[in-house]
Image 1 (cartoon, helix red, strand yellow):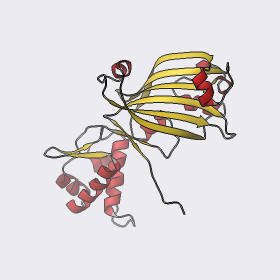
Image 2 (cartoon, one colour):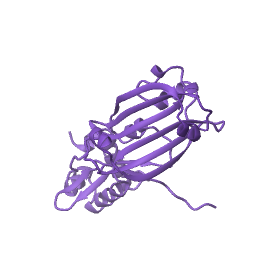
Image 3 (cartoon, helix red, strand yellow):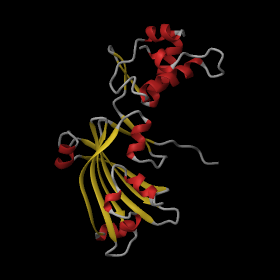
Image 4 (cartoon, helix red, strand yellow):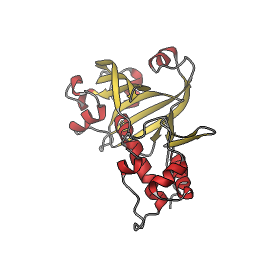
Length: 246
């Protein structure tokens, strides 16, 4: 089945320019897994024939998707669906939501679920009293079959009915109890993966990694979640949309 048969033909009568229609069609093919990570895109000539547009239109559409990070050009080889994943720092979304939005299948392997009390460091970070009950969730996060990150999350015990309430998604469990964070402070820094993290992520010790620390807050201003996530630096990018304040 061709791409045009899967995502539909372009509409010359539409007010949307043809290159933008083609971008949308290709984006749908990627998100719908018609084109998977690392798959080669058909040559520009073939895409032009298939969608009945000029090669200039095809090139312009592909340029836009390359700039978005969905496609990558390899000199002498062609254009491929990117295997990298971008995290938008301007939106408070879960890992699972990010992966699904990019047409990837998320899943987790639990390393540990436990209940306890805040450590002195956690008490300061979460602005809680000594002895405050918390749940801790440690897991490996996957996109399709690729290990992307190791996540260590601490959540106030008052926000969940029981540790078993978290099945696959922490944020979905928090949302069911009305305690999903509505804003967060996030800090990103470059790190070298320790031996344990590298083994879990199928990387090498001291490979480049990204550490994202997130402190999540409820509407009333209470801090409820502190998460440290170590990402593989070779396949994960962080982006942020900036604007000039008026």
